[in-house]
Image 1 (cartoon, rainbow, N blue to C red):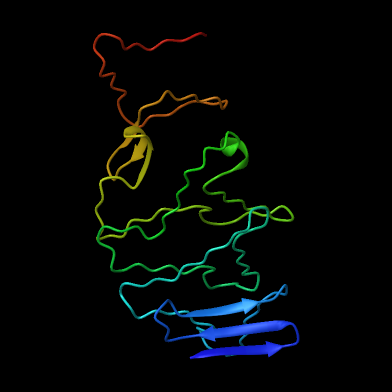
Image 2 (spheres, rainbow, N blue to C red; image 1 turned 120 degrees about the vertical axis):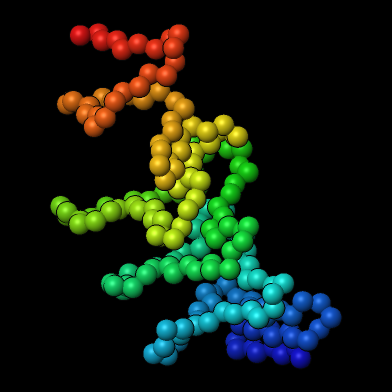
Length: 193
């Protein structure tokens, strides 16, 4: 089936059942909008039932956002609800970049989270949370590496840090139990006071 729907200068092409990949082509300088007034949880549904097929979104944009998601009406539901209950060795959310840009550390980021209320606001709860269920056991809940070397990791029973720490806030540092210096040849407690 190959069908062209033409209205003025707009063309919508449906091409199904060919020997090559089936395509739907929209040719226009105007926006393509899908709008549904259905009062259901899945007003617009993109679905594939083939276990060897996925859904890809590709854009050639360079100076505008490649994908904008706006959920300004959501109040008590989730903005994005991602479930991956059949994972064995895959990754639920994989964000990667091979960019060699020299400005990447300052003006490009793999992730950026910003809560900026329009006025003074005190929120009850956590701004960012990693949660491990009661039946879950894992080597590390959080792990920062440089190549294959561990810089910082949080396990269920221990926090390990491989870089020096600087505590610059005014006030005491409190430890509930012993301070154990394990380097028998180069460990000391020093003060500049």
